[in-house]
Image (cartoon, rainbow, N blue to C red; front, side, top):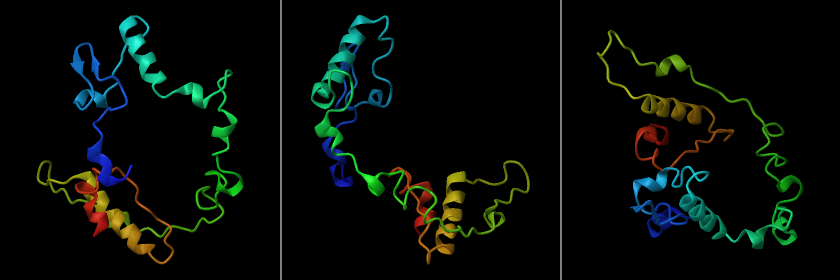
Amino acid sequence: MLADDRAAYAKGWTGPKVVDGKPSEGSWRSHQVPLTDTKRNPQHLQQLEQWLQSYRPGELFDEHGAPRAEIAAFAPQGTRRMGSNPHGNGGLLLKDLRLPDYRDSAVDVPQPGAVTAEATRVMGGFLREVMRHNLDTRNFRVVGRTRLLPTAWTRCLR
C-alpha cells in the first residue's frame, strides 16, 4: 500500500467489524487482539473462523496445508531469495560501518531533573552522523514506521 493510499482503508478493515457489540474496525480496538478467549467463547471462535475464511485459504493451500503449486511458483528462486541475495544476507557485500564517537551524542545531566531530553531525538542525531560517515559506501539505511519520521527521528533526516 502506498503512503497516499493509507486513508482509503480503515484500521482493522479485514477483521471483524464488531466484537461483543463494540466497534472494532476503524477504532482503537483494531490495534488490539480483536477476538480473545476463542477456546471458551463460541461466538468469538465463529467470528475468528469467518475472518480467517475471508482470506479464502482453499485457493492458497492444498488439502495437506501446503501452498498450491501456482502460489509457490511466485516465490523467488536462487539469489532472488532474501537469504541468498548478496544485498540482504549480511555477508557477501558487507562493508565496515564507520561510527561516530557515541560520546559526542551524550546528554549532559548535571543533576537529576535538570535536563529534558528524548532518547529517540538524541538517537536520531546519532543516526544522522552514522549516515554522514558512510555516505560514500551507502551501507547504512534507516528503516522505521512512518510515524517516527515526522517526530522524534527527524534529526536523522536533516
